[in-house]
View 1: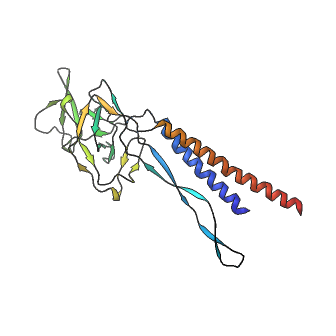
View 2: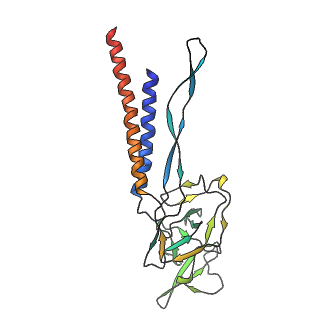
Length: 256
C-alpha cells in the first residue's frame, strides 16, 4: 500500500512540473525569439513480481516516473515585421551572439529585437537586457550619430573604433553563429542560451540577415493546450491513486 501512495505522489509531482513548463510556454507565446520547452519523463526503479511458483513473472511493479529533463525546440518562429531598423531576422539556422558587459561572457539568441544603449563612450547596439550585440569582427557593434543619421562602426576589444569604412545602420548586420549540435543548450532566460561541451564551439556562418523584422515565438498554442489537458488528466489520476489507496487502508483497518 505504501508503494501506491508513493507512485501517486511522484506521479502528481511530475505532472505539476510539466504544467509549469507548459504554462511558461503559453505565457511567452508573444515573446520575440522564445523557444518552446518540452518536459520529458523517466521511469523510476521497476522489477518483475514473483509468481506462484516463486519464479519471476512478467508482471512489473515499480516506483512510477519522475520529471527528467526539459528539452528545447529550436524550430524557427514566425517572422514579425517592425518599423525599426534595429530589429533583425536570421533566415535559416543560426544565433546572434551577445556579450554581458559586466562578466564579458557570451550567450546566444535568435531574438533580434535590439535597442540602442548609451554607454560612457557612446551608443551600442544591445539586447533589451543591455547585452552587447557582436559584429563579424568579434567585437561589440557601436552606433554613432552623424548629422542625425545612425551609422555603425565596430570597435576593438578596448572599445576603440576600428579603421575602416563607416556604414549606415541599415546596411549593418550582426554576426551569425552556429554550433555543430544545438541539443542540450542551457537556457539562461527566456530567449538566451549558452552552449555546453557537447554542443561544440561556435563558428561564424554566412547567413542572410534582414532588418526591419524579428523572429517571434515558436510556441504552437493549440499544441500547448493539448499538453495542458493531458497533464491535468494525469495529475488527477495520480491523486486518485492516493485517494483510493487511503480508502482501502481505512477499510482494512476497520476490519481489524
